Every structure is written in C-alpha cells, then in structure tokens.
Length: 73
Image (cartoon, rainbow, N blue to C red; front, side, top):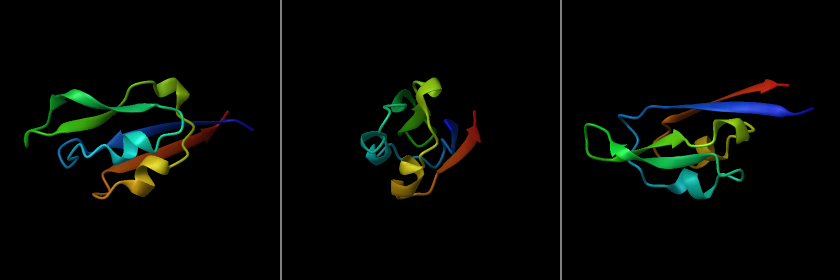
C-alpha cells in the first residue's frame, strides 16, 4: 500500500529554520526564495509528487506550523 502526502504550512508563522528540510527523507520540501511579512524564507513543497506523508517535517518543526495530510493510493 503506497501513501501520497501533502503538507500545509502556515507561511506567516514559519521562521525558515530549515530543520524540517534536512529531516525530509524524500527531499520534497525546501525553503522559498520569497519571504513572509516578517522577513523569513518560508517552507514550501518543492517536489509535491514525492511526498509520502511521513510526518517527519511536522514532528521536528519547533513552531508547529506544518500540517500533514495522507491518502492511500
């Protein structure tokens, strides 16, 4: 059974620390070159098709700004 995942990031609260990026086993996420209203580069899904919904990113996020969704395919 394969899983497909997706994340939703609260871009205004993301501080761009990058902890989630190094913990993503499928290299799905990256920090944006754009900045939020506070001047931080925020997280986004660079390769959405490779996300498995493992929740590693949400688990390590110190500010709890990532929500992970999973579906069976």
